[in-house]
Length: 322
Image 1 (tube, rainbow, N blue to C red):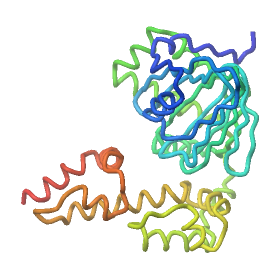
Image 2 (image 1 turned 180 degrees about the vertical axis):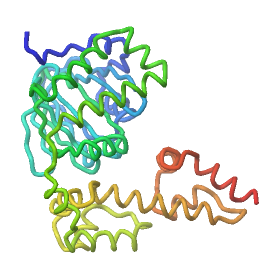
Image 3 (image 1 turned 135 degrees about the vertical axis):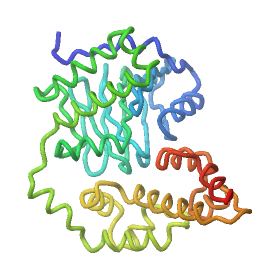
């Protein structure tokens, strides 16, 4: 048996769906991950399914499409995505790298990065959806050097793999973590800390160099602050900065630790917070969200509550009560 043999048997009790309908598959996966494009390339199709459980700020899942599939996520939205194969194989393109992913090799995509994968007909993915703030904090404390390529059969990652195997292989342990927020928090932190502490450390010189932002990164930031209420795309920001979208995405992330689109979201969120706190008695959350560049009220409310610990309507209600 391979030292990285991984069979998340306990996860099978948490089947999110099983379907022969591609649109239904896409919709149900999007509810726990994010909107994406699915393009099947195989002639024969078996049922697709997803097993998924959420532990605090960590989501664990297994996905199979029952055929060759191309998965296209334009930009990972607000979380870190780690994926490897339980069976079969995949070719994943993210940033400027094309990676072979299988049982021993994983890919790690940061918020704002693309995820473009071609999956073999027998591929079953194991996915970890990791809260961005929790992962960033742990990786900074560990001094981790983040790379999209992770060899999960390497000795430093064996402790993490053993813990992941224990959690997803024990029905009692997984259910205890799923049903008890305190236990879930411990498991979430343990898995994130084990992962980030096992990644290569960034040399201090590299950290110092990354803190000096190129001029085009500063131009991008100035443009975003001035036009955050507009329906901006990455290409708009790159054009204003005077570089290609790929160059901006890579160098912005290297200098700031987040993507340009995540920076745009943060600026919009700050504007929305200030607008809600300064609102008059007849203000409406929907109008403020729209005026700050948020065009999906439900997503804005969820993101705002996560950022500030209360719903935007609560902020507005407390403000207008005076």
